[in-house]
Length: 301
Image (cartoon, rainbow, N blue to C red; front, side, top):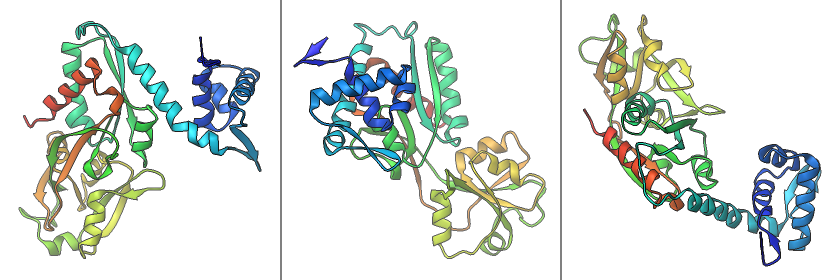
């Protein structure tokens, strides 16, 4: 199909080329040969009267027009995908969809696990794919690489809608055989004991809680640095170590491990966990239903 002399089939190739900035990567993404993607690029160059991609040293770079086209073309592709996904009436019991959800491991046991149980009961044909949180979650959202992202409110993308799912606090967790920590945890003991601290991503970056503790003026001895949230509780078992983690996750861990959950002897910020989605999906009935289910399972039991 052509529109203003442009073969609309080339739009998908254009999107891949402008996003990947490599013909080989674009070919792999579209499952076509190198010669096929080169031919598509040649036709696009003729239509736009611009090179779109040029060799600069050892890598390809977008021309100014290529940079200007990248976002509008991506938004157009996403809008087309959303349009063809619309069904005249939603029958959730038989709806066949896969939703990609970007989450940290913190929300998996307390939010995603109950969501999965709900889906199995109400919408067994709906599947979900969990994607790890990376440093720039907003980029994946804008590219349409994820359907939902679940993040603290400080990491939201200002250009897309979001909804608060729940608020959480922070607690300290110790092994129930810890002899250094009594029934309560005072600041002196908190500062004296070794700690388990999560640093996420590559390179590892401190979490919201870790940055706050570092700025509080309390000097801690970090005995173990881990790459996720859920391993924190496991790592203190059988030791005199302390870890500071989200209260919901702390109590979930204590239900399965020999742990004690204590108040943090330092004032901590409230954690506001939100879900965010691309604006083009706001009116999608199945997507809206999924958001409603997340709101439902996010409420405390």
